[in-house]
Length: 119
Image (cartoon, rainbow, N blue to C red):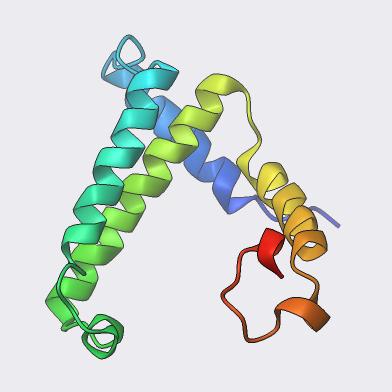
């Protein structure tokens, strides 16, 4: 049985083609891409600045769509950064989940927002 295509890999390939067609590789060095991730994260934060937790959880549809597009910008720049550095983002995320499970065992961390070194 053939494995279905990996959505993250499909996005990575589409993004690489998008960039190549526009000759943007010259601008997509790791430093610039890391800065772009941070800049887009700042744009995401602007949507939540000054909101209460309840307001943040119940965004109006238009704002929610703007947030979705900012999240997409962050994902695309991050994916591009990983591509340029030869990092398999999905594999790195899997490794990080394993590490986090060790740092935050359920018995000690359930219901707490405490950093692992303070548990």
